[in-house]
Length: 336
Image (cartoon, rainbow, N blue to C red; front, top):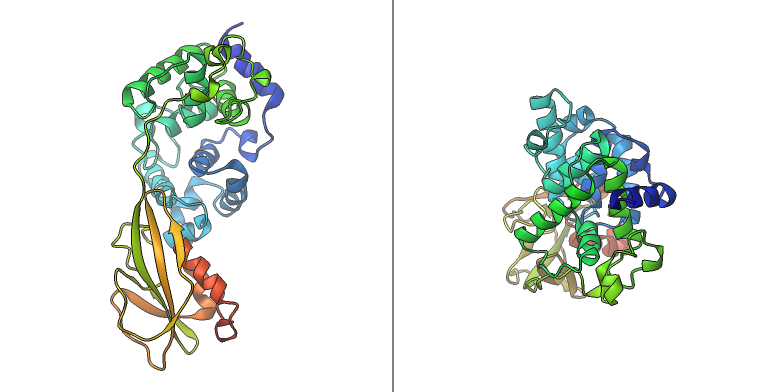
C-alpha cells in the first residue's frame, strides 16, 4: 500500500471533529490555518468560531475595521497574523473579485500567505497536489527517514517538500494533507510519540532504531532579549491614560499603558513587578499606579473613560495589569 493511502485511510478513521474540517470553503480554511500557527487547536477554536460568526465571508472581513479585528484576535498572540488576514481579505476583494485564486503563484501574492498556508488552502480546499509543510509534517517525515538535516535550513525545507510532493502524487490531496498534519499532532508528537498507533510505523527508520525523539534536528534559537521597562497607570477621576506608541515594533496598532525605558519623574504607588514574555523579548515591568488631580499631556497618549477601556485592543501584558487593578475599589469602573 502506498504511503499516501495509509495516511488517508488513517485520517478517515481517526480525524478530530473540528469545525473547519466540515467545509471546503477556502476562506474558512485560510482563517483556521492562520489561527492554528503557533497556537494550540483547543485554544484557537473559540476564536475561530467567533471570527467566522462575525465575518463569515471575505467581503465582510474586508469591510471590517482593523481595530475591531485586532480586538477579536486579542489573546491569540503573534498579532501580525490578524493584520495580514485583514489586509489579505482587502487584496482578494480588490484584485481577485472576492475569490481566492487556486494558482500557487497568485495565491502567494496575498498578504500573509506563504508556502505553507498556500499548500494548505490549495490541497484542502481545491484538491491540488501542493504540499503544506509545517512542524508536524517536518516531524513525521524526518523521523520516517531518520533525516538528520537541520530543519531551520532552506535546503531541508526543500528536501522535505519534495518528499511530501512525491508521497501525495495521485492521492486525495485534502485527506493526505490533513492526515499528515493530524498524525504529527496526535500520534507523532514531539515527546513520547505513540508509534503503535501510527500507520507508518513499519517503515519508520527512527522507530526501528528507537531514536524517535532525536528528530527533527533543529539548531537552537537565540535567547530572547531582556528589557527593563517602567509602566504607568495614570488615573484622573474616571479616566485613564492610554498610549498608541508602538514605535518599539511590538503589537502594532494596539493600545498600551504609557511605558518608558527609565523611571518617569512623578510620584505614585509602586506595584508588584511583573514579567511578560514575547517570542524574542522579555519585559521586566516596574509598575506604578498614579492618581492625579489634573491630566498630564504625553506624546501619543489619550485619556479615555475607564468604563470604555474594553473598546480598545490592548497589549496583553498591560491588559492583565489593568484586570488585576480593576479589583481595587478606586478602579471598579475599569471594564477589561
